[in-house]
Length: 319
Image 1 (cartoon, rainbow, N blue to C red):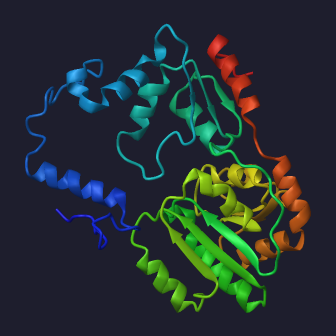
Image 2 (cartoon, rainbow, N blue to C red):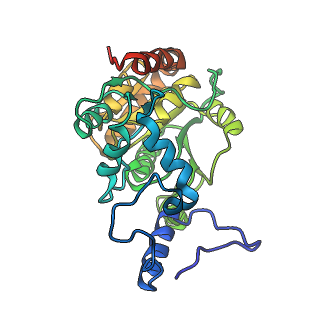
Image 3 (cartoon, helix red, strand yellow):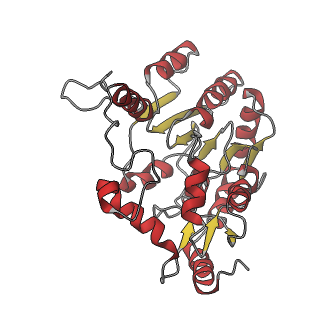
């Protein structure tokens, strides 16, 4: 088994992929026969039986107890993971068919949920951020500071943001980019890509988890947020940006076109190429103050979510 790389103090090295590590561990354990004597092997797992569930018993019981005497509703960010696995849809159905109803972001997420669990009342509604943020004044500029925030995964298109940044620099736009979040893979290839593009002075990499108490200051120190996704039903970063009063530049894939109002709370790139995305950034920078104001006004709130959940819990109504 290949151990996770560690730094000089024995801590896991930032940027190593947790997913690939877990996959390797499972494959190695299977090859060594570690799962050969599991209880109930070859039979349906009795999830109600704590002895079979082990440390996960509480999670299993909470999920499968959703159809009990207490009405349960679900807030569903993504019905299935971005990295698809064979049992994803079956597990989603197993859990959610017992719920009274569900709330999901408008667009592909809500549509997929209705497809996976026919008959389940689904309320399509923007999900507010879990971190409390307040709109803040824009920082001085130029230079204009763009923020790429959250997990760095293949579908999130960081390479498109970097290529667009190079185009902006070539156009003479005084712009910088901060990348803050956990990398699902080594960070060094990204550093090499940045150096190869001559962007070392323009890009700041902040690999690693950003604590909740630091998120507000991070957003406040930037002018706009970039969401250059290659695919996605929606993004949890958009409501975060709105809550902080920051406009969003995004590709028009999946549900992003429903989250970002083009020309109002941000700009949408109509194609996934660097020049088009760079032009979308310039559109936001040209109208930065009104777009920041509009973004703050589009931030979803928990009040509307609570009312929808109450309706679902009481009578299963998605009206």
